[in-house]
Amino acid sequence: MGMESASQLEQRLAAVRGNAPRRSPSVRALAAYASNVDCKLATLGFTARVDFDRLLTATAYQPSFGQSPFAFARGLQFERMLAEHGYAAILGLLREQKAFNVNDARVVNVREMHADSTNSMQLRAQETRALIARIVANDSNAPNLIDGAVLETPIGGIPARFEADAVATKFGDLIHAGEVKSFPVVDERADPDKLGAALDQVSIYILLIKRLVEELGADPAIVSTRAMLITPKNVGMTPTLTEQDVTKRVQRVNRLLSTVPEPMSILDQFAPDEVNFGLIADRSLEPSNRIDTLHRLADRVGTHYRPTCLVSCGNARFCREQEFKKSSPCVTGPEAIRLLPGIESLQRAAELVEGHKPTDNEKPAAQLLARAGRLHDVASATASTRKRSSSNGRHSIR
Ligand code: SF4
Image (cartoon, rainbow, N blue to C red; front, side):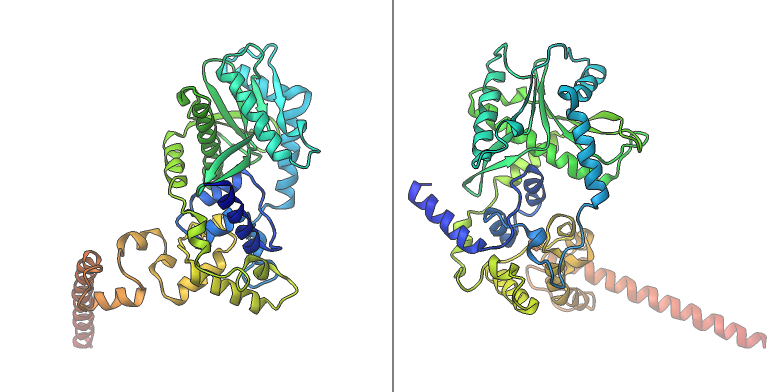
């Protein structure tokens, strides 16, 4: 993309963002968006850096998820404890559980290096690049542990920077990525949703480091696809390290991020002075007007609702209601989506069960639905015959 078109695009995205709350440029936000790349509204919001979790505050669709203050405070306390005394707790885990030689480990906290700068993200991205370059060049002064890295990658053709909660380590041949999470691991088990989200985040971190290593002319295979998770053991604060192979997750996010549509093609579908995220977020306006604007924007650019939106996107309650009104199969869950390809609504599915003629698109699902309808008729007829004969039997005893 040329300089002029890049700045035009940035201006148009700024116009569409208006005064809407900004999302944090984090790997966590990228991991949440990665499962929604086929939704144009989500792509528009993500590339315009709008925080969908706060967009609909004070409307009927305000999202109900979010970390409890208690869990948030516990997370901060755990992270602080791990960073104390030159990351002694993390280095201890790497020595005990990975058998790394951590004597004289060199640790760099990139976040602290540029904390007060106005262009902190840019400086941190440059610093991260320089540090990883030293690692891949086997510089004897290269760091062994990096915290607070910022990595760059294009999203829909636009360069973007993302801040990682995770740490990167290199004590042997491979670079490892580790994510710090404060949810407990009890008897080596964790909440599956939280574990899945954490592994998705670390997979993105691994992918971004691999891309950077490749850009630096080295083999991306030096970045391990075994994710390290550092969590409290049981309900206390003693850290423990678990590992999981995330090769498939890394491949999946790589595939998803390469399919992000170019935002210009979405921006061309509406006039930002009429509909924009600033108007949707504006709490001085009537909530119904804000929701009307969201309706108009969603209709112009398109959405792609699926049940996982409920845990990954702040607009989910709004989008679910629209799908519910259309009686869309996707509101009933992933099974229905898989079983009803080409079927637009649950009413239409019911018609096909009754034997209505399918369109070409509907044919694959229609055969199954018609068969299900016939089986249902047979089962109902058998049940009523049994009911009749048992009731006749009771009469004859009398
Ligand atoms: S909730 Fe709506 S806007 Fe968000 S990803 Fe799902 S369909 Fe797109």
